[in-house]
Image 1 (cartoon, one colour):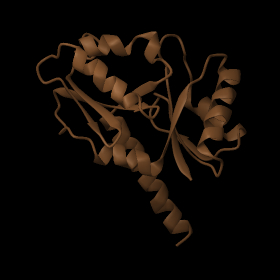
Image 2: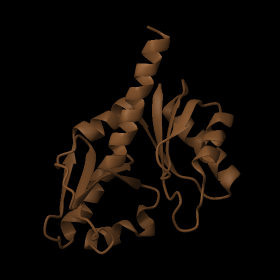
Image 3: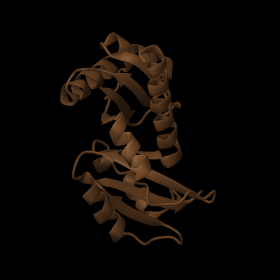
Length: 186
């Protein structure tokens, strides 16, 4: 099965990691066809292990190697593709569109928190098929009421977010893997 591991807190707040080194940790933990997308902790790999075992195994390996409390979320290639396909917002050069990767059920908590805040012009959130999406004018992410809530420690272990452009790059990399596999195994 093909997966994307979305690492939380990579290359922020003093947790500096080179993606090549992160990929090496994944390989040493037994993952196959390991690669990264951008420097924000998006690791693509293959494994036949059960997802719940993978999460624990990879978090332990990362924590030991990098001396920090690793936390990651796993999505299959199909789940990542669905995140992109279900995005309810049209791309706009003046807006950021985020998708939140979280534990099942926590997307509802995000929507509850969003609804409690005052919203800026053009700021909006939607829940689609268990995924939480948020759009906000560029330059306002951290200054918005909702953005400030997301920075709280209580959210540390329940979510990470990615710009929809990053999700698109991950999907494209998965698609290129498939094309290469078809060439090798027609």
